[in-house]
Length: 561
Image (cartoon, rainbow, N blue to C red; front, top):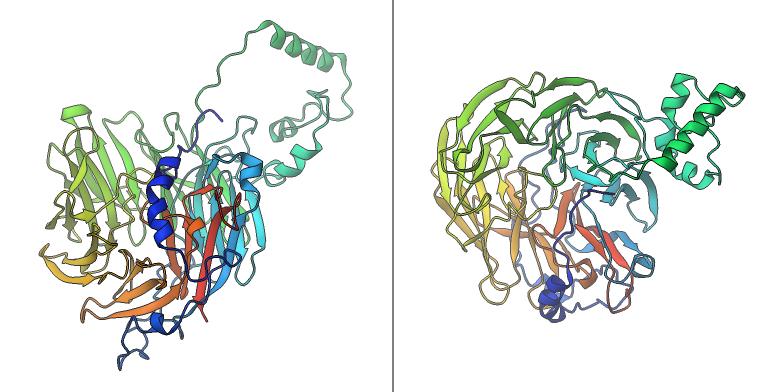
């Protein structure tokens, strides 16, 4: 491929930097088959003192959702926080097949009620719970350029793909269902013959539709054309391949891996990774690439609207979920300005517009509803996030949360896929947002909650030296956070933090093998769905030592015992 997803932060230098910490975190059961263990010894249970309300269920209950709604699960505490392994995905002999220093981008981790799905290179891989076997694999026809974390209530999502050079126009236009040549590409590749006689063999769907080159067509006219083409190839010097664009959108069923529909983005000549962005809101899939944007109906893949690429202001990206938020970028250099708009997903028309102050270097969309944006300042085109700005339901300024340099983890620029919906370390609820502070000494930090109306700090949740904590999501009014083991003996955990009382309760306790890599924002996905926790690195690399040497860890899943 001539253009593709860039290399991620899993490099030798990063691995060397983390080696001391990983050695310190040698797991109590780490040597056993690389599997997650049921790690609860008496000391692990004593991390949390018993309270009278530990048997209570989460206060909020899930509202019944329509199939096209974006999944918004309210997570109940598992009956037991003792974790057991339900998914153990690793690529065996990865180092032998690809080389000791090879890596494969793995953007995208999704979970439904019965399936974990990973995006790896140019494929989606599905795993059912309770087995380490791969349930299905879907060839996307090219490397993944971007994914969205959003999933519909009935388990569908969208993936943006850079088309392989040898693929033809399957799905060109809007709402085309995948053709046989795409769905059975692996089989076709294995069945190719040593000769290409033919312009007459009908290798491409486009040839079949035109009715040319049928099997029985032996006319001299047809043979002459084939000969001329072969002679032209000999005479003409080879031209460099133009950069491949990320212009193929695929909508898939996560439980089966089936491509439901796919579409070619219109006028997407500048859609290159990592500057493309795909997201979803109810009933709509939207894509932006800086100089244009387009929206498709979830039901059938029909195009609903598209922006004019010649406009003075381009759509830098969208944030989805409960609503659709658009970032409009106007001008260049010092004259660049930004506008944030709430957009009607069916028409593309703005509902309201918020103009960001001049002098802003970059803007990220943290949450669509409630609307929260991250504003970057400083030198260069990107700069560090200086403020988080909350907007009300009419797009008016609501409050600012200051981000002093070096105090909080924001990581908005670190993700290597996507353009604006890229702040995984910031969690936003209905009334508060949550930030993790930088580490202080031996893996100790805290999570701080801020009021979206005033911008003031409300409560601090200290990790108390048990390991670094990061916010994951707000569910049922509680914050779910990941906490790594601080001493190599206590378990890793997902914990539930109550913003009203300040109480902390264990959600699931488990052990993450060192071969998974650092579980930190921007380096690994941590997905909580249906009372289960899934952890997956954003890049697959071969382990260099230990029982799993040469294998690449792809994902693990945990549920309550």
